Every structure is written in C-alpha cells, then in structure tokens.
Image (tube, rainbow, N blue to C red; front, side, top):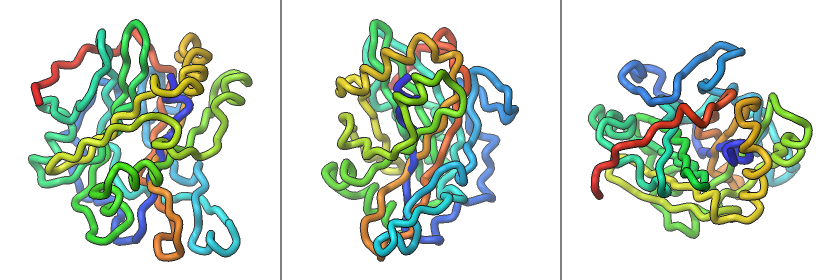
Length: 260
C-alpha cells in the first residue's frame, strides 16, 4: 500500500528520550503478527535504525547525515484494519495499545496510515514512551499546532524486497508527510494520533495503484521522525521504524470503534 511509499521516522532532540527498555511489552497486542524471522510473511518487526540516515549534529554546517541508531520510542503493536468507510481516530478503541499504555502511565504516538478504495484499509503503528521531555523537539511537536506538525513530521521509506518499478516509484528519499498528504492530528490526554490520509494526494494514489496488486510480494520499511532545522534541535532522532513483510489484504479485520 502507500505504506510502501511512506516509511515513518520521527526525530527527537535530546538523548534524555532514550526508549524505556524496562517497559513490559508483553501486555501490548495488535491483530498483525509480530515475527522477527527474516522470512516471515504477513507480519511486522522493528527495523534497525541504522538502515536509515538522518541529520547529524553538524548538519547545518556540512549537510552530513549519519546512521540513525537507537529509536526514541518502543513500537509495541501494529493493527491491520478494513471497513467500508475511512477509519479515523483508532486510539479511542477500547483495549487498543494506546489505551493499555495510558493505564500504565505511558505516552503513545499512534500513526494511522489510511489507504482508500472500495474497501478502506488502515495500518496502525503504536509507539510508546514513559513521558514527554519538557522543551524537547518531540514535546514541541506533540503539543504544537498543526502548521508546525505538518512542517516537521518526516517519513523515510525503504523497499528491501520488491520489483524494480516499485523500488523506483517509492524510492528512499525522506518526505514531510504533512506537505505530501493530509494529516489529521488528535491530541488525547495520553496520546497523539496522526491519521495519514493517502487518498488526499493524487501522487500517493498513483503509487498506491501501482503497488496494491503486488503488496504480498513486498517488504517495506518505514521510519518516522520530527525534522530538526536548527543546531539546537540537532541531531535528529528516530521516533521509531517498522518493517512490514508480504502483507495479505484478506488478513485485515473490521475494528469495533467506540463513539467519541
């Protein structure tokens, strides 16, 4: 899907925002299977941050990019949904990873990649951390206005496995998501959800039309980050990155969403 065209990477400002490695991840679940096997199918795994290059400490002077390294947040679950209409505000769903995180006093970033069609699909990534660091680039992104968010949310895509034409169409160039497609931001008490509407872009729909028929043959990686523009904000940091492998459209399920 245009998931393919959108590897999500979000950068952060300080080393204080290291992933909380002591978070118990066993309590989180999504309907897409987590499988670290290199040859896994219809599943997800966490991508190696070093697969992606991001702006280094001295980028403003030398434009140098460096391997991203460790993620700022933990990717704890992925959901793969379908419905007859676009699926919005999934973080309100009872029992979802964002609500489980809230019960444990954790903060979530929920990225909902919405794929249009006669059947609407959504692939949702749940990233969690212990807390927002006051004054950090990520905290400013979470609590900023939509104009600021759209100017900073960055995706880096990779297609490790796929046909030449798909690789060429998707590429690996970072893009500002809010400039490429419509993004709707929902700030809850313990989460920020980003609904990424692929159907809002003619170009994105063109890429989607190319890859939708071969999605089961593809392995796609996406990294999300907040773009750093000043020396004070550098170096960039990945929010998180995911690898999805050989996704089956038929495995998507219809979610039960609670009313707002």
